Length: 395
Image 1 (cartoon, rainbow, N blue to C red):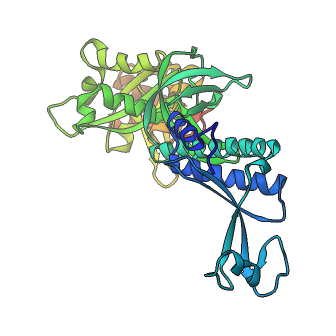
Image 2 (cartoon, rainbow, N blue to C red):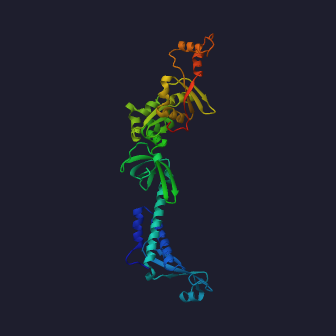
Image 3 (cartoon, rainbow, N blue to C red):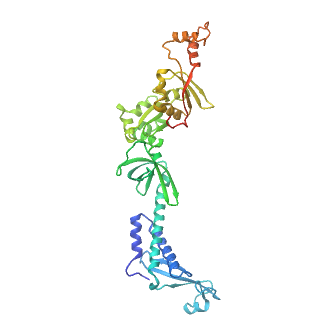
């Protein structure tokens, strides 16, 4: 039967186009919704089927009954004798469909169908969003800041859906404003009972990695390789780089002329400081570089325990530790070693080193090895600071 007032097919087609939903899926959802509503509110004991022709818009509501020899349930069955009066070709086991009069479509049934259809549309939209972004985890996207809530979460519009930036994934101190466009790292897409949840981040190290690749051609084409990144978002990061071309300075390539390349990166991250250091296959040299700008002395490495003891003179100690322990903490995270900083006396020259070593009884006075005397100074040291790759909290 056709509804003279409303063409359901046209109405659903417009909704499907406006909501970016598959038209046939929406029609199927409508059929199921109306069948459920009619069964529940009008004829609860009967089997109801609904068919909507997507071309003509013709809507049929049918009561389906099975042809049987002896009727046990009149709502679901019809006797063979009665069925033959209506159709001489029917046989036992076949199903017959009986159209429902329009007058039986009660207002409450149509309202229930509308509510169920709305729910189906929401579910379909959620699936569209999930399918759109499930394979885009790990990508960096440009999003528009939309709103925040009273829990400190920010929400950004991606296009087909919204992503959430919880406080832990935000850059501390960064002021986000609705309408602004920012780059976000798509960290996780998962299904929940309330729909898909898209977790975005501006604090993730991989956002920094992406920005470096975007701004530095040598990184993008593989000449300069990013070996490791340690980041404390909004404050400071350390990036270890290595050049596969001896004619290309990896640090200079990353910094750019007058710092223009690294400034473009930090500008996207709220002026976060980014230290670029040289990666070295030699663990001791890598640790030494990671602790820059501090200048450190002897480095003893325990390979099995992933620990390193680094001697530092008093004038370099605070620089090696950094504000709130940040420098040594980032160095530990960058290298993957627990770093134990030990203070040693400041020595101006090798002769003074020998003299102090002999006075302290650390080296045999008969020894004429200046290097042995100098090295011995570092054996009597005092631990002043430690940092572990896992220790990323402010002291």
